[in-house]
Image 1 (cartoon, rainbow, N blue to C red):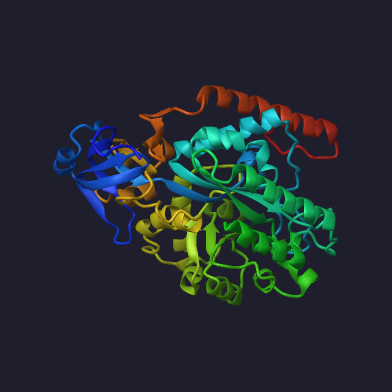
Image 2: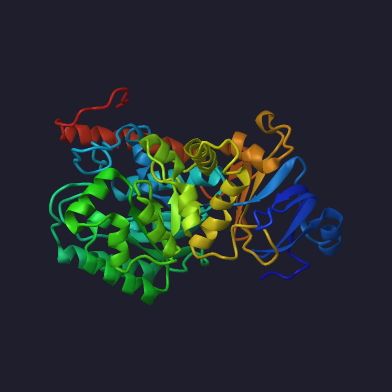
Length: 465
C-alpha cells in the first residue's frame, strides 16, 4: 500500500453514494484513495486537511458510486447481439433443446479475443468493475480479461451429458470422459489464473445446467469447489424446456435435483431462477444461495423470476446481463420495472434496492466482501457519474435519477483496484476505435461462414452480410 500522505488521490466537492446498509449519501463531500483502498470519506475541507499532498480530482457536478458487479455473463456471446434476443425457445411443449435455433459460429482465437475485448469495453463504459464470466475454454481469452483492468471471477464450465444442450428432451447420455475433461479444465484454469493480474482474476467453478450434469459430476464439482475454496455457479430453472428435461431424467424439479446432489450452498450463484415453484424457491433460500437476476435477457425471453419471493426465502439477490449485452444500468432499470409490474406495485422495489443488488450484493456473492460499497478500508472500485446531463437534471434524488433515467454515457470515469481504467470519458486499457471496427468485421465474417457452410439454416430477416 502506498504511503498515507505522498501518493494519495482525492475526489472532492462531489456527491458520494455509498450503497451501504444505511443507504448513506454524502453531499459536498470527498473520498480519499490510498493504494488500492478507500482511505476516508467525509466533508471536503476535512479530507483536504488530512491529505494535503494528494492528487486532487474535481467532482463538481458529478457523483461517485460503487462499481457494478455483473454476476452472470458470457463475453464471447457479443457475437450474437441483435440475433439471439429474438430467437428464444418455446415456453410450452414440444421442446427441442437449446436457447436458439441458430448455432453460434466458430471463431479463431484472434476473433474470439476481439469479441471478448468488445464485451469488456461495453462493461467498463456502463460502470461495471466486477464480472462473473461463465464459459468453456476461458483460458483462450483470459489474457484479454486481465488486460482490460476489470476484476473477474472466471468460472470454467463442466458438464457430462453428451450430444445435447439445455432443455433438450430425451435420455441423459452420460459421458465419463467428458466429465473428466471438464474437471481437468476447471482445475487447470484455477492453477494458472487464480489470483492472477494482481489478484483481479479469481477462478471459480461452473456447472452448466441441471439437465447437463449428472449427480456424480455435481458431487465431484462440489468436492473440487471445497478443495479450491472458491465460488460456484450454474444456470438454474432457466427455461421451461430445462424443467421438463430434468423431470424426465430425474423425476424431480431442477432445484430439488441440484439440492439432492449436494451442490447448493451459500457459495453458489444460481443464474436465472425464473421457472420455479414456491417449493424450489424455499429450497434455494434455505441454502442461502445467491440469485443472478438477469433482467434484460429475462424480459427479452418473456420470463422473470419471482425476486421478492426468492429474497424472502433467504436468497441473496444480485444482477447480471447474461447474453449479448453488458449494460448494467439497463439491467437495473429493467429489473426494477419488471418486478414492479410482476408485483403490481408502483413503489417497490425501490431504486435503492436495485442499486444494492447490482453493487454490494454482487460483490458479496462473488467473494469480495470488502467491495461493492464505498467505505474506508474497502476496495477502491468506483465509478464517476456526470450529473450535468439533461436527462439527469435535476438530480434531487441521485440514486432514483440514475436508475430511472441513467445511460452508460453518464459514466465518465471508472476505477478498479485503485487504478483508473477509464478517465474523463477516455478508456485507458482498450483501443476503443480498433475494437469496434474489428468486432464488426469479425461478426460479419463469422456469420457469413456459418450460413455458407450450413445452407439448411434460415437467415433471420435484416441480416447484413
